[in-house]
Length: 223
Length: 218
Image (cartoon, rainbow over the protein chains, first blue to last red):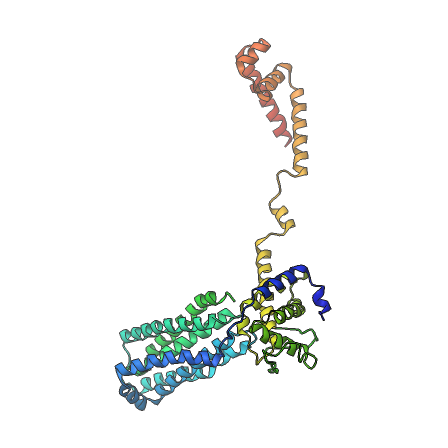
């Protein structure tokens, strides 16, 4: 039996519904966020393996032994990247709460806090080798350069969905890409954390997030 | 704030618990009696994802009331609600592959309808900012052809004709022939039998008299 309310709808709705019904074809359901996240993380892991093959793990482990907070900063960056990517992929599905955007916060706090501790260590014990200006610029280029393909991949994964909050989703994509890049930087990063280094990383992350919010938001706003 | 209403009047937010999902290959009507409207719509959507046109059309028709409720709740003006309905239905069609059967259709639909309602409100806000209110426009940009301006011009013309009529005959003749009828000096000289120099002097004096009269009054 037809819904009486439906029967009284304006004919324009009925025409549209009939048209959409005629255009209906079976669809392949969007993969759940965890599976899309896994796909993105596989690319990140592939880049990490390539960097390990080039630099080797020894330098990184020695540095982490000498300054454990650098290891914690790397772990925080990795956690931020995973949580932000998860939030971006989750927000791209209609009906998911915007509160998911807070998910990367604990990882980000660990990342920032541990990096800040590294700066304090350099301040009080000026023995470790700290980054020169040129090396800081290299870090900036590395983070931004690697963030571009990682962001592009996430945008591709999100565009197949329906991001109803495009700017917030793009911010999460930028944060995930920048955090992943900063984490990967740890593999070949030969210097201890200094204030200039931390500032450079923060600048790179802010740039990546801002560019994603400006451009990614537009790319995703078709939803 | 994201908001949604179902036809049963229950508020459903996007953290609603997952509902039971029917088998997409099962006929849509087979278990309708035991399902709530929300579960029924979820089952229809699952069937629509598999290509069931009948379930899809019933689902879309059933969704209109939900979309309207969401649009009204978001503050969309009544004359724009149907626009929101149509845009939401189009979006539903375009992104139907994003529906996750482990969650409710109503939550999914409400999020889309909520976004389309916000889009409609933003469009309206932009249009209101771009367009000037009529009274304000009239005040700032008065129309030169309105009724009061026309009446003023007619009154000015009458005063000018009266002033010309009161001029001495020689000056009045010069103004009428040279100024108003725009005839040339030789033509007027020939028709009136006056010398061109005298006509020029009469015209000059007439204009001076008129200027003094009107400027003196203003």
